[in-house]
Image (tube, rainbow, N blue to C red; front, top):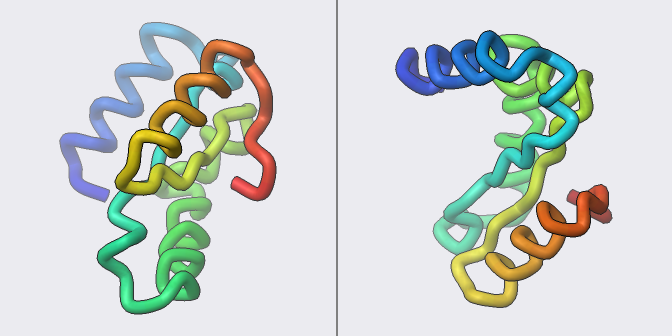
Length: 89
């Protein structure tokens, strides 16, 4: 994760507080560019480390696999609006 991304996440926590993290959706993108889905799953695992998104997920943030299509984008919007938890990420 780049330093600017880390600063942005730290600013989000500082401004909104850790309780607001349960309302955050973290989207992973570019799944269509991976050689295999296993590669993406491995990368998601790395994102769950505390130095990346791990602490946010522990506080209730949710991960969504955003595919490069309208259906996936609308699904993410629906989840945000409904406040529902992702199924199978």
